[in-house]
Amino acid sequence: MYHNLAILRMAGQMAGNAALRQSAVAQNVANADTPGYKAVDAPSFADTYRADQGLTLRTTRKGHLGDSGAFGPGTAAQDGSARLTPRRDPGTESPNGNTVSLEREMVRAAEMRQQHDMALAIYKTAQQVLRTSLGRQG
Image (cartoon, rainbow, N blue to C red):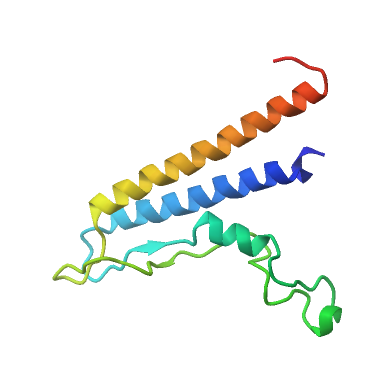
């Protein structure tokens, strides 16, 4: 019942996106001295959430909207997975070809922690609202 609530689904997606992007930060820091390594990242939560919310038309069955596939091109990855890709704005490249800036990665790590904390706060608030609506305290 509770997994179908949109607010909880959104909070779960936000926490998952923060975890994925935090793993990208960890991978970048681990490879900060690797010659030729290009910094990676995943799409932001706003980008993935917009794609998942169906702001483009989706096909839900074969032949729907004249599409022969099971899902339309406007859908995000159906399994919720996202891939780490080279960062769009990698910054300056060191003489050995590495694009990782440790200072930038630490700032990104703090941003991802804030995003994860926000997702947890949303869960907690939604849980309190549900308990209150059911007449339960605590």
